[in-house]
Length: 230
Image (cartoon, rainbow, N blue to C red):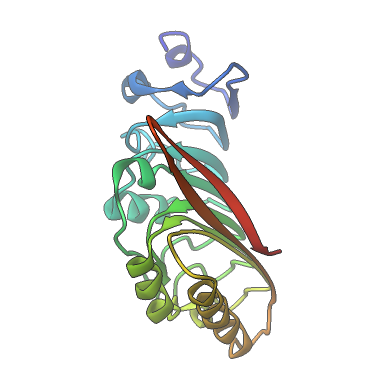
């Protein structure tokens, strides 16, 4: 970390953890971000929270961000939305591990330059308000492990405000449901399709639904996915 603090002129930084398991970047909160950084990619490396140095005043030129954050909060998403040059965002969160199932929202004027966006691992809906992400063309939403009642809530919430993303061209939605019936999964899929059908751009849509079945065996629990639709 001390070495990174000396790389004042670096513009592109990629960190890939290739070992078994994953790398925890707890100590990176003390890193001083290079002011000219335009690309940051951290693969299989988890931050416990959004680092304080990931903010608009310290990273005004950041255009590509791939980051994994265990406990992302609503205010963190708002901070990311104020990054002035951000065009490509791959944001993965660990909300299932922390039991976070609440709704997140993307407000007006957020992510003004964003073109490509992947939001992965959210335990609840992400709602886009009018004026958000005005240049976004490609969107991927991946919701993780939704129990029955939260699936029901999401059905009512699609209603994600996809119609407010005026430049949208391609949408991929993947959610993994646990303890939900096939009918409930189909209901959620139908709600997503309806949101796309009424979108003024008629963007292309791909849906990937995975039903996770848990088998209780003495001393262990085994979970495996059933792919209902690709």
